[in-house]
Length: 251
Figure (cartoon, one colour):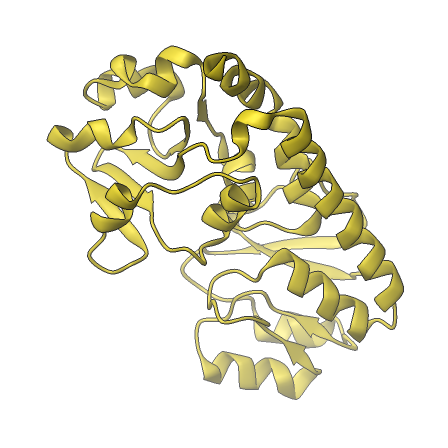
C-alpha cells in the first residue's frame, strides 16, 4: 500500500482512473519539491519519485529509503509499460505487472480494430493558451507515443516547426498546420468555449468541422501527457466519440 502520496498543488486531486488506495495525500507547490522531513516522518520502505528536480534532492530522499526516480530516458515522464514492469519487479509482483500490461495493450489493439480510420491518420497534441499554440513534436514524448500506439502519424510539417525537437510554437498565420485528421488540444488558462476566439481560424479547421478535435480538461490532458497504465486505458474511453467521428469522416 502507498501510505503517503505527494502531488503538486496544480494536480492535487486524484485522477478519475485512480482506485483510491493512495492513503494520505499531501500537496506541495508546483515549483517546489515534497517536504523531505515529512517524507522521513512516514518512515517509508521505498520511495517512488516520478520526477525530481536534481541529484541533490534524489540523494536526500535516498538517505531516507531506497528511491526509484524516472526509469527511462525522459526526465519528465516514464513510459507506462516500463514503469509498471519496474514496479512489479520491486514489489515482487512481476506476473501481475505483465498481466496488467497485456490487458492495457489489448485495449489499444481493440481501439484500432474498432476504429480502422486510426491507422495512418494524422494527429497532434498541443496546448492552447493566451500566449499562443504549442505543439508536442518529440517522438518519445508520452503524448505522441500514445497517439502513435494507435497508428496515428504526427505530421512532419509540425515536427519541422520545432526549434528544440520537443515543442513547436505555431503562429497565427500557420494555424493550418492543425489540419490533421485528429487534433487533441489542451486549453490552459482558456475556457473551452473561448477557443474559437482565441485560435484564429479554429472553426475552419478540418478536425473541428469533422468533430475529430478533442478539447481536454486537466484530467484528460494529464492522462495522455503523463500516462500511467490506468490513465492510458481511461483515456481511450474518453476518446471513443472522437474515434467514431474519425471513422465517419473517413467514409
